[in-house]
Image 1 (cartoon, rainbow over the protein chains, first blue to last red):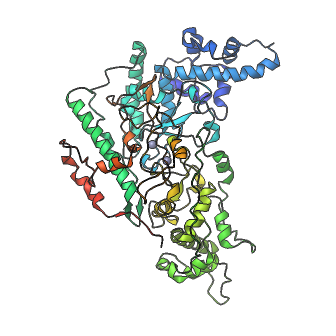
Image 2 (cartoon, chains in turn purple, brown):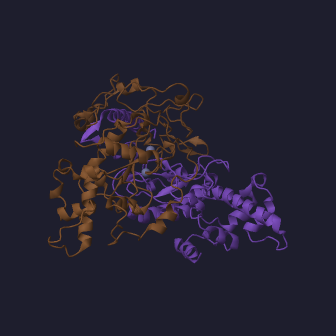
Image 3 (cartoon, protein in one colour):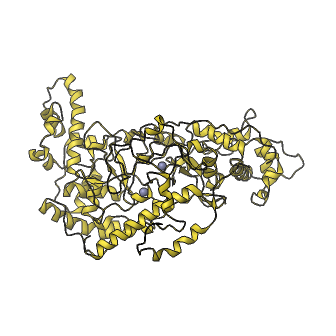
Length: 278
Length: 338
Ligand SMILES: [Zn+2]
Ligand SMILES: [Zn+2]
């Protein structure tokens, strides 16, 4: 956890990094690489945990376990169930935390390190991925990975990650990230632009996140920052199946149809943009 | 290609398993990766009980190769043009076919040079072999056995995929995987395939494969099961549930040359706090079109060969001239297999 602590300092955020032994252990366990650290302040503010007591059995003991406040004389039988409940509780808190300004910033660091892996789609050129859930309800669907370039979702490569509950990341997270940090929306073509991720992204990002925190909602003034995404889809590369150099009729026809749908959307968005409605 | 085994390609496999993609598709992949890496074959030549071809195909990272029949390799006609591409041709041939080298032939000092040539030779022959009836048959056996894995895209519902190259010339790119459902290509999930040349599978194979076995090729249209929410982009069903309809009422694609399997047509819909992200947002969806399918086959005809809506007199058709060029090219429709 040393590395984590050092990086926290280097971001200059006012982070008093957590010293919870349980959280450190959880984060360093194999398979939990997608999780970020939830700051203890956040966990200790009961307001942030509203409603979770109905989702988690032995709620208060599970909470004590996460925050290292569990009585030592707890019986062994309950101990093992507590561990399961503590993971559930941490996961559900995590889902809420990563859509706060500070949580987003923490996940952004992991994104820049490609901790969530890279898009398997060849034409996405190893675009880093972001975790996402298909539902916000636990025990329903495992975590998926969202690619900001092709805007599609993929199953994690390893079963270790494939069995993580998607609700611990939630359905909103990656989209909120790009809503709050629109300058990090990946380009649709060309190599992954890491310099931009680092340089521009950082300063812009922390300024923005502070403001977002103040307003307790995503900033609404992100429109009109000089770049627009109405026609970015035209830049997307596609794979074109060919047999001995010739396109395959039915697939070519489908791809033409899809591109006509795309062109329609681009025209629609351009029109909205012209009228200042974007 | 005169000496092919003459059995018909088995037109089998009406239903391939469409399991729910819940837990990791490539189960345990990373574990294998760790174990296998570095176990590259070196000068360990095959034992006498094993043919070179069987040995080669059993090497880690070579799981996508099928065994090319020796008959095929022995027929010079099938090798036309390859000898110019493979150094130490004769020695490489001897190695691949397990022929004892001539005693009085000059010895190649380093056996690993010949091994590299043998691999190149086998790979290039393999590219041709898998386009033949027997080769396609060998590959569908592997496909059915799940040897190539399944599409990592969630909404493809675990559709099985096949290896392919982005070039037919060796040395340019590593092997990729083609998904017939999303018509896209993916990087193999394990690094042990990073040393495998894509040309050994070639650009044509996946498409000839799915033209030959149409019953496992997804159709280009898809109607979401009724009841699922239909939105502005109508077709983007929110549920990764594949269409069950096709099972009850026999599914038919009216295009006899097209895919005859019901497609997995779900398209991802981003949401924030339960609300669809509007396309008006800067971060709104821009790429759903790439995965969208029309509800009916007829709708495909609403777009002309230059990519324009036929019944659309709106003016935004002007700038798209240049796009037509590529599409004016001949298109492959019906491939009778060799
Ligand atoms: Zn992607
Ligand atoms: Zn797919």
